[in-house]
Length: 522
Image 1 (cartoon, rainbow, N blue to C red):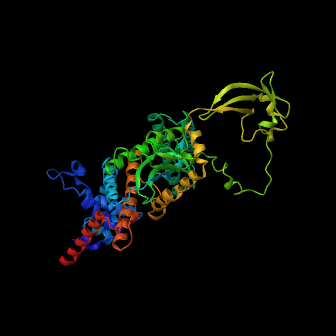
Image 2: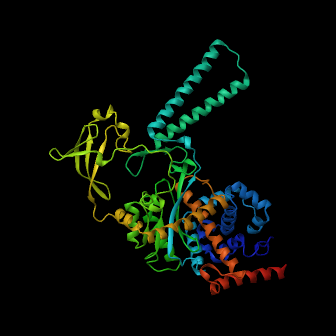
Image 3: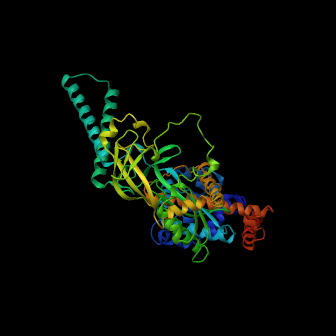
């Protein structure tokens, strides 16, 4: 039988996966599901199944069928599985039924990271990766859109049936291949119609954060249609909170929504719990810096940062436009079309109204219209006046409504966290701290998506997607552990300069001793 200690080279990622899962992970978490010695066929060791999946993910092999094939052909996989060859059904079922057990493994790996000094950083960065799911974009739409699609498919079915009946009445001869293709097409349309009908009868419309209906998906209704750098995608928003010095992921979660405004509380709470289990105190996050990009600038996320007493750096979308350093960048040589501004409107104190440059009146409609940060007085024009206005193209930049609305700033909302963050992020010293964000979290996503080829989810449903995303993050953290071990063995300084960490030396000496014993035995 193949010996993993002999076949897997010390200091490599595959050796770290084998050693940590076998020696450091508590196997009792799997006992309830795999303790079937008295009844039925003996189960595969769950640690072996987990090692196969993690090794496969580290090499970009996400398909359970390809993992099965690798266990039969690849020497590394054969060593990791001790010569066993579990089929794809066993591997797939094991992965999708891990549930909370994968989180416990993640916590124990974080404990090892803490022992190696990889969690002693003071700056954490939060970001999300929009990954395609195992769902079709064409199967998305609001309930009204899906009903129209069902009606369209039903009409097409009726049309094909009428054409078939007409040919039968006229006794027309049809080529057998053409007839077979038409029958297959009719069956396909009937299946699609039944699928849409079943979905509409068993589900309710999905509501977004604003209270309006968002698109549902027939294939996986927990996925979402999101905008990514490669265009619209049907998938999930995979979040990760990463610590600066070591780039270890301390918290992760996948969401069926493309918005980042409300994820701060859950991500920080999960990170605090994970760090506590890894050996930190009750206030593991207190005083630490947390940075995130403009998409996270919301009252909910900033409130979560205050609750966990972290030093947050989350700018608004316009923070660069207020910085003189960015004024000269990306400027077009084309002259910009001048738009009317507030100063172009004349105020009439007697009627408390404004007169537009075309001489039409804008009447007061709201004395104290509030956003989350500011208070405005709103003046709105008559719709008829705006429709045929020759100056419409120059009026109030960015407004697309049928009638123009002029908002006059009155005051700030007291105690607004977003306004306080705007003031904080305009400080050059704080901008330097925020600018470190891109070097903390973006390389992590680059490693997962580009190097490990983990560029999509292969399962359906938010629960299973979260299991797979945690496994992705596990592979990344295990790689950080293996590199820290390798650096120390080669005589270089480990992370944070911990060249003489007694725990790291112990871990390295154990691995080297096992290698030597295996060589002697061989």
